[in-house]
Length: 357
Image (tube, rainbow, N blue to C red; front, side, top):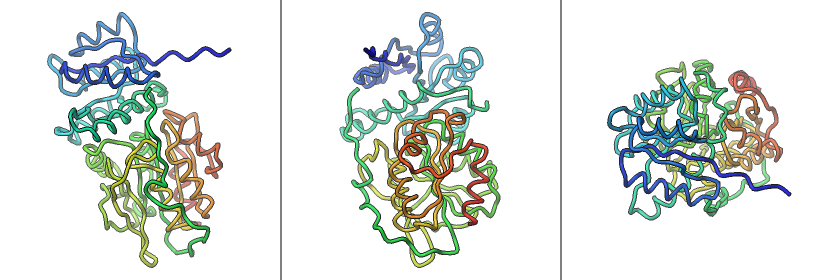
């Protein structure tokens, strides 16, 4: 008889007693998570870690005595533990985002906004999922509950019809990623040439950070990277990042493609959802598209990638060895949505090759 798996041990580090209490309540409500300690600053956190090493740490950015980024750097150099950075909606900036990711943060989430019921419930789902995903993260691959209602893409878009889209001269690329995806996407986009095919990306990330994330990538890559806005056209050499807390869908006018940013419920526990993007691509681009699913926990994108493949698109999945969390690519592969499975460093070449055919 199989014994139930022990819950992941979590250490919550935040200088606000109200936030510490809220985070403990949110995380302990999930049977897969257990808050073993809380700390008001990194010095107290270090003492807690010496007594019991957690499976994952939630870490505030701004704290007294030592800021979260400095503590994160020291932690990764001495005793690597998966870390989810928690930040307020009111003070995000591209420098903080870049520093947190470069220092080794597995994910970044927004602190729960108390008193706003719908937002709070969605935030709880995102926080729990991010912490569980981080606890399973393979840090070595980095180069430097409550059961929530789980909706499918049907909640936002009707399933694509059986009719294949007419082939066009231009192909579009849709990429989906979650835990570990911020750095994985950087590695992919940095290797793409300036004339790469039009790309639209869903990376699970809070709304306060997607713009900064796009700015960071734009500063590092030959391609142009920007946060998507409704009406944006899909252009060669340009990458659009779906904004946090909104779904992003592909549109078509004649032989030209664009995107719309739309409201909607959490789909596959996420907003933006990879499934929503991939379904829209299957519906309007069909065989004129390439789909790529990368590192992340859960199954968001697995159904959508299969729909893309069934509509004639070429599809790629990141392999287990190079994934921080082999969840989304694994589910897509199991369901038959992945045509080619490969290591992260081979994906840029595959994007160019498949989009040229």
